Image 1: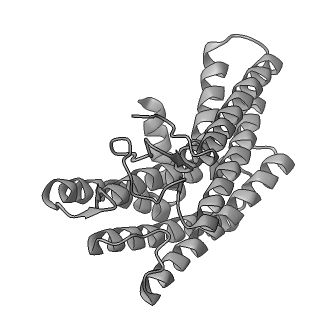
Image 2 (image 1 turned 90 degrees about the vertical axis):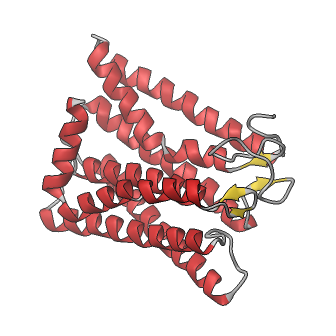
Image 3 (image 1 turned 180 degrees about the horizontal axis):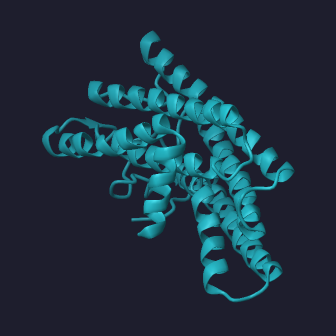
Length: 266
């Protein structure tokens, strides 16, 4: 709990605007949950508020992660402010589009049904592209600069950036085929809430694990460095092995999806 409070305090002090965007994401959970309970409209077999809720949660995690990690880099206040404000602004604009399209009861992604829907989808693509470029900046700066943390944590952050870019590439695959399912059209039977297909391949599985590598790998490194009394070299080796297994897992789920095989068959 104390670490969560530290992250909350750091975000609030370092970037009030980004902090407000995180809070806004979290506040949006309530209307999305209410919408799921009171609105019986379905989109491709799923309540229209499920997707906005998923993006509200994942967006809050992503923005908070970027906000905290940025404080470890030896950036000037001006550079840090530009990066964090850009992330916050692009993420809130993307969220507005997803919420609005959910309110309308239409798809937010891969929607070319009308000129307006195509414009909304293209706008989201621009926001995502900007964030990917920022990820690349962070990746190179993690290599070039000394972060305000231990070597093992810096190494885990570097691996995390590599993995999230891998996950973003999987997202590019979905964009190229204008769908996330393989073998059938989107909207078939899926797992509760996540809605990952249970009868065909689904690229969202690899995309999900890839995007959250930025949290999982550093958290593993933090746990190892705190709980395992050993050398920095051994810590780095352990994190490297864990990251390699994690990448292998993402690659497996990607291969599985491309073969039209469901992540979990039901």
